[in-house]
Image 1 (cartoon, rainbow, N blue to C red):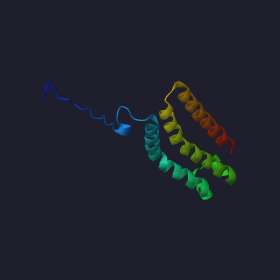
Image 2: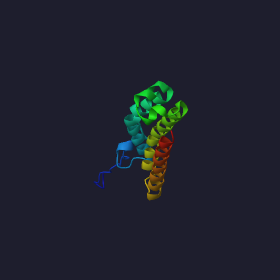
Image 3: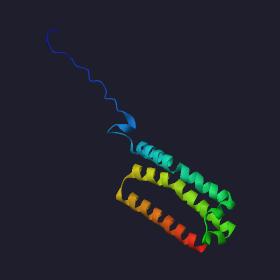
Length: 123
């Protein structure tokens, strides 16, 4: 105690994980993807139900009643796959978070949207 100074031990800083300021981008991607999946879970199940039960084709009057059963089922399978891909794309976009990544996501979403419109018009 000759010096009279108190030695201070620095304790390591604890980080709060994904919700702290220094959270991992990958964990943020998983979290946001999970939240988006919770929002699209019901539409996914509805699309799968429409795809697996061709009798639901009668629910949509007009031109859709005249469509082939295979085309109707394939359309709803494509919609279900697209809806399942949305949380993955959003989570990946949040994890990467760059201009190029956002451009890729917008491009993929636009292609799916255009494909569904074209495919819907064919049948």
